Image (cartoon, rainbow, N blue to C red):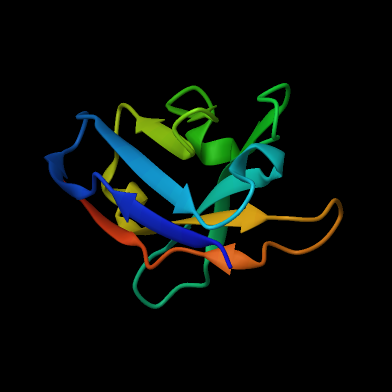
Length: 119
């Protein structure tokens, strides 16, 4: 069983930065594709960014490209999301997810951390 715990959320003014962390335990973190998703009030959960097990490939939602950076430290079993130039529309609960099998859906999820960007 894989456990994921996010941290680093908070309240920030537009144009500011936050760094989210997601610590994993209970599995083989270095083998998993990891991702960040977000869900704003009244909206569907949406993909934000993902990173392969070796960090060789990263993918981003178009609206965050150039502002957000996903990275991971397999020695620390942690994935990060550096968020710069934040906008009010980035306000959401951000959750990390793990995909433990190639081609499978993300099957482990954290509880999420709130990010609020004020204008």
